[in-house]
Amino acid sequence: MLNRPALLFAAVLVSFQGLAGAPGGPLPVVRVRSGDTGQIVFDWSKERCQQWDVPDAPFRAFRNAQGRIIAFASDSNSLIYSGSSILNVRHSCHSALTSHENADPSTYSGVAFVTAVWTDDGKTVTALIHNEYHADHFPSACIFKESMKCWYTTIVSAKSIDGGQSFAETSPPAVIASAPFPQDFQQGRHRGFFNPSNIILHQGYYYMASNTTGGMNQKPGLCLFRTATVNDPSSWRGYDGVGYTSVALDPYRADTNPYVPCQPVTGPGTVGSISWNAAYGLFLIVYQLVDKIRPDGVTAYSWSKDLIDWTMPQVLFAAPNMSSKNCSDSFRYGYPSVVDPLAPGRNFDTVGDHPVLFLTRFHVGSNCGLPPNRDLIRFQLDITQN
Image (cartoon, rainbow, N blue to C red):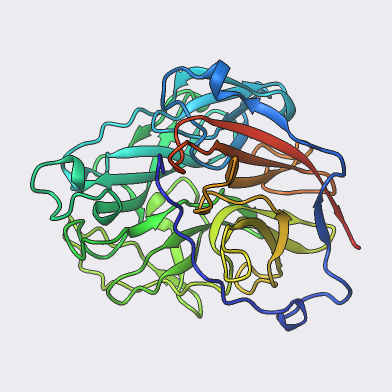
């Protein structure tokens, strides 16, 4: 995350009619409400706590034990948003998880982002942490000088017992998704798992998705994970193409289990969020998409009956996303997340007909790059059958 290009994967997608068990009829359509130009949730120019106080991950939220909304659009200190409703959360300077950037990659305590949260009672909160190890920051740790060629990412777990006000990483680290090799292997490209989605509960299982760049016998793409026990990080298993048998391998600790790679699902690019829509009996995913037709990128969405086969992408927000290299851009957009303010329960993992879309808006710099000037904005959405 931070000031880096997005890594997006070409999608191998299937039609709605090809989905096993998919209901008949037309696909539901997701649109930004006509005339909605966006509501600023966080204005970097006025509300930042420091220079790199930026919304650098998709918006995540839960209801705490008092019914108050606690949310994150994490930077490297995971500053908290809070409010009485999803629609009035405000940014604070309170850090729930500080990045330590430890020089030892085996600690998995590098640049850390709270990227998914789940709570049953509003007090004990499980978090998925996107952890970055920047080997170029440490002498002799990388044979290259460019950040992306030294970049190594892992999904680990953390826990809060105070309603999300602070998170503690486990010791030893609880690795949920990792490359099956240490950070000094295959340097010269980004390696590992990154940008996990939110967590959703469906029919007794908790699911999340994470992108991977692949390596060794692991294919690149979007991998799906599930567990029946969300507060046990060792219980997560990745989809292997048939069932859920892929177990995370910690390459820095002895592990007698052979590495079983996850099989990327037939889904889209860099995942933003996943939700269940009960009215249509379908899962909704939003993501960042770049392809030959849209080289500057868009925010897109797809539907699925089973989280494995996804429909062809549809454009949700047509402005260029953060992968654009077009220097005429005034703004680029990234880290999409769809959240329904009226969702029941504590974890906002379902959507009805009128959710909202959260996006990070990047002010493009004079050198065509992405400086820290980034805002969090939201748009009203409507989901209809036509």
